[in-house]
Image 1 (cartoon, rainbow, N blue to C red):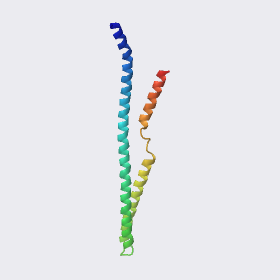
Image 2 (cartoon, rainbow, N blue to C red):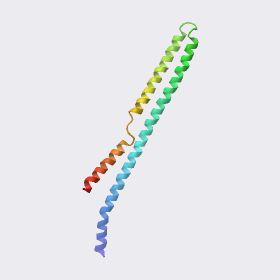
Image 3 (tube, one colour):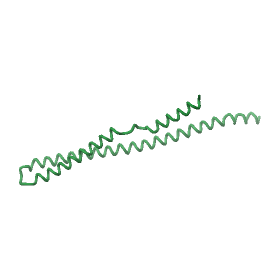
Image 4 (tube, rainbow, N blue to C red):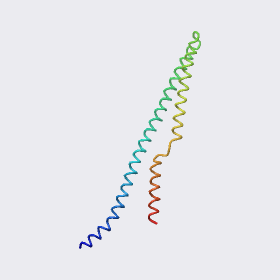
Length: 130
C-alpha cells in the first residue's frame, strides 16, 4: 500500500505545481490589473480637472468680455486693462482645453500591460504544450 500511496503522491505533485504556478500567474495579473486601474483613474481625474478648469476660465473670459463691452466707451484706459484680463483668461482656457483634448487622444489602451502579459503567458503555454 505504501507504494500505491507514494505513486499517487508523485502523480499529484506535478499537478499541484502546475496549479500553484497558474494561481501565482493569475495573482500577478490581477495585481497588475489593479495597478492599471489606479493609473487610469488618476489620468481620468487629471483630464476632468483640466476640462473643468478650461470651462471655468472660459466663463471668466466671457464675464470679462461682457464687462469690457459695457465700459468700452467709458473713460480712458479702463477697457485696455479689462481687455488684457480677458485675453489672459481666454488663452488659459484654450491651453487647458487643448491639453485635455491631447490627453484624451494620446491615452494608452486600457489594460495594455496586462494584455501583453497574458499574451506572453499564452505563448509560454503554447511552447510547453508542443
